[in-house]
Image (cartoon, rainbow, N blue to C red; front, side, top):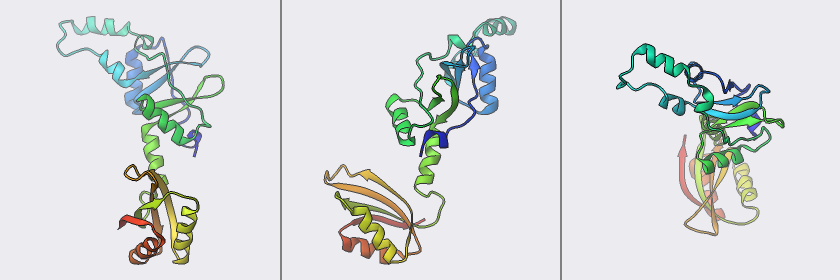
Length: 216
């Protein structure tokens, strides 16, 4: 899975000299929380976040008149509120590396740029969540199992063969680190066309510990 398969495209962008109120209105109408900012050549020079634009909005406690406030706000441009150091990704980046970058940098979205640093899309935490749901077969019926397995070669091969021999079909599979035991890994699988009792007994006989098994 790559960023290009899950990003929102084409990229909706704004220019640095756009009044911030126009950019904020665009965000609210299109339900975006961030917009790439480009120069006259279409190259990325910053990113405008909704929260930053909202902070520039007037406080209810202001003593200025509506006309005075409107005049002052009209003078504020996107360039004054945007973040200039933008963390970006490329369409060929793997989805997990993009997600790792978001977590590492503490950002909720990444502009996707081409070789000329021109935005061609954006990938957000919502896109990552949707991908996670797809990877784990969310919404598809089946038997979901969480396993603890001894780390080693051929674990997935033995597991898939055992399920195949029972007439089951693997819908999804994922791994996670078992921090309690350094020599073990965790597996989450979703299987169809096999009973819970059959599968649990078979996997336990292989040496896998079934932590949880539920029909979803």
